[in-house]
Image (cartoon, rainbow, N blue to C red; front, side, top):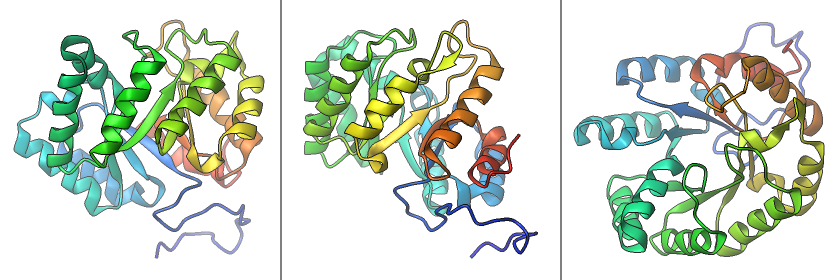
Length: 258
């Protein structure tokens, strides 16, 4: 059990600390961390991290034994690694459902328990994403189904339909693309309201947007982070957190952020 300084004077905000947890989850991004740096972050911040997204196609670049070391290290600290959606998008574009089946099987053989299904960079229809979700579930993989795209132009009703389709297909989590959460320099209140009334909060992750989305400024990511904690409270599930921001993000769960 973690012992914190100033515990007697910091007000308990009801933040869920025991892992594994279904609320108050934080998913970080791993876009190529060496295992030594990865472990340094985990020693300090593992109590606040629930999942780590293996970004883009980085899993194909490592030597396979090195990848296994990274995955084992996350599991050692009770942080579940999952595969980001871009690699599946690429596999599906190149090799269709047969390629996806091979991808899912190899993910399972590596000990990966969850994958993201998305249509962020490559157009994959909702019907195709539903089929991909079901194929992954047949292989006992959990699915994080992402709604929206980097363009952030989705209509709220369409995004709600996508979220419902993922849940009906067996996805354990719906991830809201960060670009959809911040439109016209303002948080998307309507989307938050409809999602929270349609999908169980335990099955929702809200991504932060960031400079990897064209035309997005770092202050917008900070503003969106503040909004999510103000709107949903300390136990909202948030994703796309940079490791260097994990401690600061945790302060928002305790009403200690700026």
